[in-house]
Length: 276
Image (tube, rainbow, N blue to C red; front, side, top):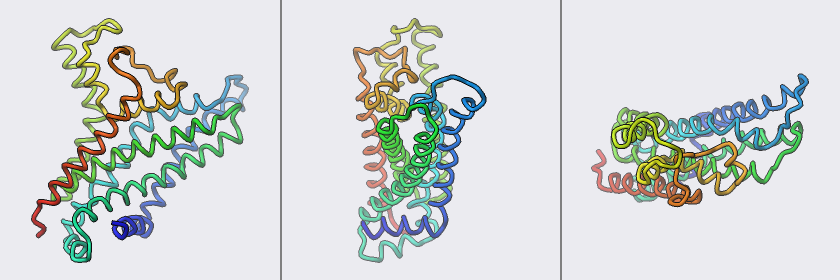
């Protein structure tokens, strides 16, 4: 498994994938950091701090991280099967489990390094230019973003292992991205309209519908962040979620399920597949 993981990481360097992702996350994070203090240079007296930065990064991160994770991971195994190189990899002293989990760890490492470098550059800009900056809180947010990336890579690699076609794996990645970030809220809205009506007073949404809404991995990421960084609650609210049935730390349970279930299903399919 170590050999496969090392190969994945080195391949990303040789193909400039890692460099490209590092540049992407650096540009993304530094830009959002910089726009917090540029207005201050023009005479604004607003307080520029960590919470302001997290507020700017919150929504873009929810969309960018899954996009990168799914696009990096979807071809991990399906691409090898399409090209035929999977036979060479399995011909070496590697079990299918070692190949599968080596791919997961390797692809996660690639995305994680890009996030750490990009967010590290943003932290440097913030330390130099902000009124106040809580490095510990931003570091925790960075680690949670890496955990969110693990979820997306796990889904992508799990789906990639379940099909031998690279095109089908890509279609699956696109479908998952659309489900998580677009269709999930639509489904919640449709279920709400069909069962209790279009408008629901705050705090009166049925428990089952609130829980279903919270099972979205992007929502679970927000809940986990609220659990670790209490100040994050000021910028991320869930007014329809019953507090007596849901706690923010449950987000870690949901994240764990989104890692374990796709990997288990993907490994089961890959282990049973006939490699041509």
